[in-house]
Structure formats: C-alpha cells, structure tokens
Length: 127
Image 1: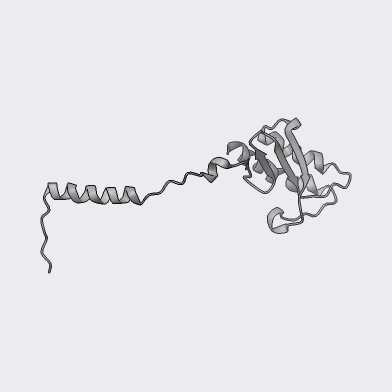
Image 2 (image 1 turned 180 degrees about the vertical axis):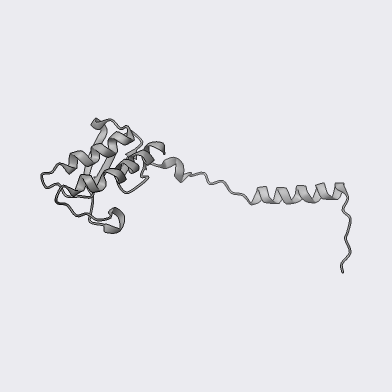
C-alpha cells in the first residue's frame, strides 16, 4: 500500500495557484462572437423573426381557395402576439420530415394544424 503524504497549506496554495493560472492561460475568448451577429430567430420550422421585428411564417399546405394563407399564419401570429402588419407569409418547400404531412384538401389544413401552429407561436413568443 502506498503512503499518504502530507501537504502543507502553503504548498497547496502554491500548486493550486499555478494550476489555476495554467487554466486561465489556456482559455481563449474569441473576438468575433457569432451569437452576437445573429440576424434572426428561428425557433421552429414555421416561424422566423428578424432583428427588426419582421415575422416570416411558412405555410406547409397549399392555398386552394380555402384561405390557409390567411387562417394558418393568423393562428401562429396571434399566439406569437405579433403585429399582423409585420407578418410575411411564405409557401413552405416540400419537406415532409420538416413540416409533416403537407396534404391539402377537405378543410383539413386548419383542423389538422391549428394546435401545432399555436404551440409554435407560443414557443417563439417565450423565446
């Protein structure tokens, strides 16, 4: 069995100070902070808010006369508490992994999306 060596307080402070100084010298703080250059917030696939307060909302269903380009963005914008004048509505690209089912028809857009869009708006508002 090895022996337990006793260390004086003075030696402990010396070694601790040297180790601490070595850690401080090893830390590098970058001058360019990418998080400070952020131009927008995209908390989910449906909403993006830029630094000027403009809100872009992607609608994953097609507009076929049933008003999804108005009703779906309004659900999200209302929960987000966004000014409707600052909202831009965009057609989402075909991407089922990102947006889920993008089927449009039979008034299924609002009935199938209202809860997920309200959740997306509330999440973005809290962020």
